[in-house]
Structures are given as structure tokens and as C-alpha cells.
Length: 119
Image (tube, rainbow, N blue to C red; front, side, top):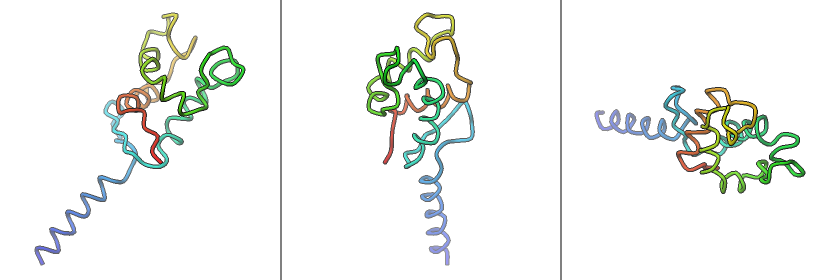
């Protein structure tokens, strides 16, 4: 009976480790590699703040297209630097705007953990 309980507890711990995308604490976001985190949590930030008309899209003024994950991945170091500059700094991104704190925290955590796009 004890072995069954121990096995059950171990299985619960393992299953809990593989479920969920992120921790509920806004200041301590832990990204877990799953099939939806990039498309549901990260990509929408790019679509509303970066890959907008005239900016990081085909034909936009910005040189990099942020609708393409590969481009986002290659620009991750510069992106981390630029999104964290003061809004008044000329190199701050998004230009003339700021990210809400939860989006900034998500992006910083995602970038710090390797800018994963799990498949």
C-alpha cells in the first residue's frame, strides 16, 4: 500500500512539472516548453506592438520582419536591450510606446530562457 501511495505522489509531481506554461507570479515567470506558449503569450505582443503597419512588417520602415519567428530569434539579444531602455531613449522599442509591465515581464523571461518556440 505504501509503495502505491509513493508511486502516486511521484507521478503527481512529474505530471505537475510538465503542465502549465508559466508561474502565476508576475515578477517570477517560468516558461515551460509546450506547444502553445509562443503563439498564445509571446507572438500576440509582437503582433500588437512590433509587427504593425509601418514597422516590423513587410514594407515597413523597420529592417526586420517580426512576423517571422526566425527573425525574432536572431534579434533576441538586441530586443532584450531595447525593450528595457527608458521610453525617452531614442533606441527604445517599441518606439514612442511602452509595453505593459506584464508583457514586458513575459518578454524578458522568455528572452532570458532562450526565446523558445516549442513544437
